[in-house]
Structure formats: C-alpha cells, structure tokens
Image 1: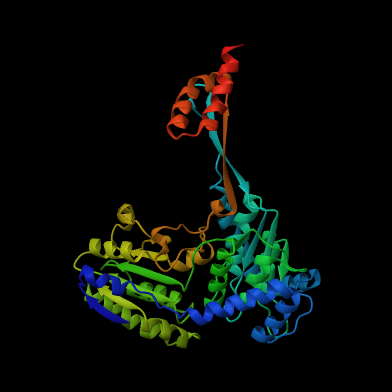
Image 2: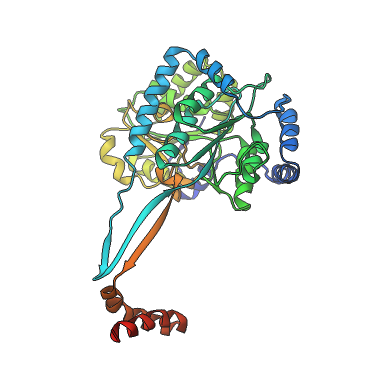
Length: 429
C-alpha cells in the first residue's frame, strides 16, 4: 500500500483510478455466448456450463429434494444468523414503502404517483470460493416486499452439480420462486432471452466477476434493465487520531479479500496513523486464508495523507467510494459533507461487514465512481413509479386555457383541440 502526502487536486484523478480490464476480447466472448444461447437455448447453456464449470447438467432446476437436503445440512447457528439478518433487512426495506399522496395542483386537477412491482426479476448469486448467500437476502427480500411475482435465481453449480446449501437455504427463506444451477455469462444470457427451462426476466440483479458484469452490460444494450453498474468491490476509510488502527486495518482487509481486483484506500491527516495501520495489516493478513488475494488487492491500494480531515472528505467525494467508513472524531457531525458514497459507516464500531450482512441496509452498491450518480439497491429498484392525474370539469375549465396557449405556441393543433372540444361542450351545457 503506497503512501501519498498532500497530493494536489491535479493528482487526484490518478489516485482515484480503479483497475481496468481490457474489454475487447471479453465483449466478443459475451456476444458469442449470447448469440449461441439465443439460437440454441438450453443446449447451449449446458455446453457452457460444462466448459466453464466442469460439470454436465441436464436439468438446471434445483429440485425440492435438493433444497430440503441443503436446508437440513445447514448449521443451526448459521440458520439463526441468517434469520436475524433477514429480519433486519426486511425491517429496513419495509420502511421504504411509499404512501401515495394526492396533490391538487390547480383547483379540480389532482395528481399522484403509485408504485407497481416489476413482474419478473432475475437474481445472479456468485458461488465458488465465496458463495454470497447474503446477497440472496439483499435482493429477494425487497423484491418480495415490493410484490414481484417471480423471483428467478441463478447460481453456478459445483463440480457435483450442486448449489451451495447456504444459498439454497437463503432462497427458500426469502421466497425465491425458481432456482437454477447455472452461472457465468450463460446464466445472464438465459435470463435475458429465456429458454425452455429458464424464464426471461424483466430486470437483472446481482454481483459477479468481470464476465458476469460484462454480460449484464450487454444485456442492457439488448433492452433488459439491470440493477446498477457494478465492478470490483471497494472501500475508503477516513481516519484521524481517534481511530483504532487495528479496526481500520481489519476493515481494509475485509474488503481486500473480495478479490485481487478490489481496491481499498486509507485517507487520514496523520502519517503516524498510516504507519500504525500498516503494521496492523501485516499482523492480521498473516493469518488470513485468502492472503494471496488480499496481497494482490493491496498492490492497487493506497494511503493518502492530507493536512485536514475536511480535505480528506473532499477527496472521498471525488473518488465516490462504494463503501465509506468515517473513523473520525464526531463522525456523525460530518455526514452533511458527504456527497458521493454508496453506503456510509459512522464511527469506530460501524464495521463495513455489518452492512455486508446484517445491519439492514442493502449491500448491492455502485462501484467505480458510479456513486456520483447512482444509488444502491433499495425497494425502489423493484418497482416502477406510475403517475396518475384526474381532471374534473372544474379542473379542465381552470387549466384548459393555459394548455391551449402552450399547444398553439408549439404548433400542435390536435393537442389544443383535445382541450378546446371539452371546454366547448362544457360551455354549451
């Protein structure tokens, strides 16, 4: 982790750079697989599952027997932890329900907005060395609260053709309607087009590696909605001399272990804090099983020292981190200065892991600077907002003349006539 002292604003652009992946070959691979699956459906899905996951599967659907077996295998303590997390996530997302408010904009003119659930959503859940069953909670729970009729889950199978038991348990707990043993680009393509076995969805959700991310972006070009632009995970910690260096080190390492392409940044007003955190990182990473992954991520990470914490906050807003920890004095009094961040963790005891699992907020967040213009997943991600208006006879008489003037000025006579014909009928009784 390289240290930078008082970088100039001109240097901020370089310091805010994330790792980039050459996309030309990747996009060609995505396009080729999509075309094959659009043409050949389940046969092509099975082919790519064999190639990429090393397992031959004839029936992608996770059976009731498989799910029940997995649920029985789950450790009782893990079940309890998942249930507590689910309740917190449910409580927080239920609070986001919007109560329609009818506004009378002009006498006799009423306007309001109502939410309608997206009918069918697709959830992609990574498997492999880090099966993200927590993401099932983060996506299926708000989908259920929103009223989505069909919640389709795809997750890559292991070498035995099975989905991780914790993923299956979380899916059953949250009301996922269909589960398929398919991963990677082929899963995204199958949910984009629909096959004989896997339904076409209306919107795609969920994290994934560079291949899944590229596939989601390609699906978006084909007219399918996605949750948000997402890439490798990232964390920025702002710390002053009130921080606990061991806490800060543990947070940086927890994010670095997501993958070698993850990025963590320490921003502080003290070189002494950088030294303390660096020492704590060396001590803690030595016992981590994913040490090689952590070390690769740390190669692309950095510590930045500014004269003041306020300068550090300004850099954070420029960087727009996915996760932001404020390990500073009177942290809560500083949140009004935070303009760009996916999710913020306030104070020494608010570890980023809490948001990843169980505090209740959603961990599906914008990365790569998209926090400047995107929000994380929320209840709103699973609904459409429909506006309504109702004009009474009094309302059209009050507002109509203004509409006629505006339509005439735009030379749209049919628009004007739609008002005029009503006003004349009212005048004639």
